[in-house]
Length: 189
Image 1: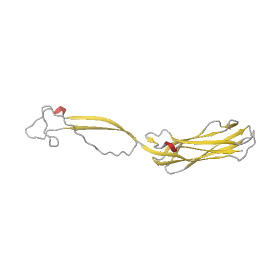
Image 2: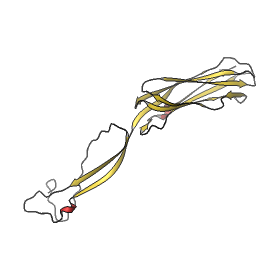
Image 3: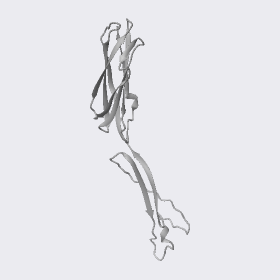
Image 4: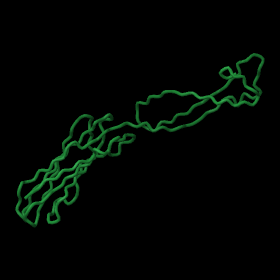
């Protein structure tokens, strides 16, 4: 009998059991199960006891932690006016933040500055802050400066963009990457 049901000679009865599992460390976890049956009835014997147990699995479940990163602000500082063919500095100030829950999260910040075609910038590439241990609920300011020389006079718009990403953090995901980038512009006359 299984659950009050009498079994015939060739009867297969599926049996299922569910457990609630809580994992405290993020990784790939393997789960497997086993089952065995025994006759619990007087004067009845099993002619083949070797097939009364079995194993299933493993089933792999990825247990992930979350670290909700964001760029909370970007500002651009530049002189209000500049002379043609004279170098001046443009500074981009970015603030990155970890809303948690995994902390600290290893992060990278990439900051770029876009300039008009008549302006040359040094360095001529984005600037990066690598391997920052970003603690939850702590704002981390980062500043980068470019030297800029424009050949024409007049109004020039400079646009800065900052993006924060998780850096090789195994089994940690950012559930909302929409707020990982922010940008802002400023004008120099």
